[in-house]
Length: 101
Image 1 (cartoon, rainbow, N blue to C red):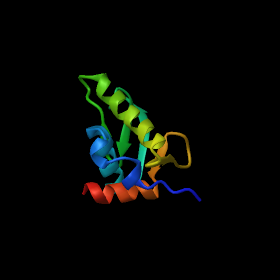
Image 2 (cartoon, rainbow, N blue to C red):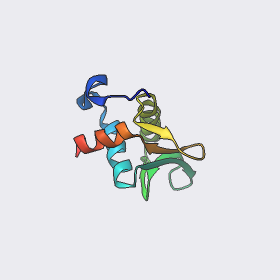
Image 3 (cartoon, rainbow, N blue to C red):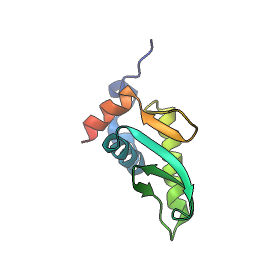
């Protein structure tokens, strides 16, 4: 089984602020993130428990976090879980969350 070693794949410092924030939020939420659409978020937004990542005055903020989720999946730090638009930290994602805390 191929295992991504986050120590050699990239440096945590190379992650964007949004990526780091999402890893931390997922860690605090039993490793879970989701995308949801609601009137309160004015469209699609990433959520971790009761925390939503959007700005009602600037729709581009939600898009930054949606793209951050996609990039974390590409880095194998998140994976889709169950239904579409639900994500969970991978083992490497959990390791990274410990490094960032």
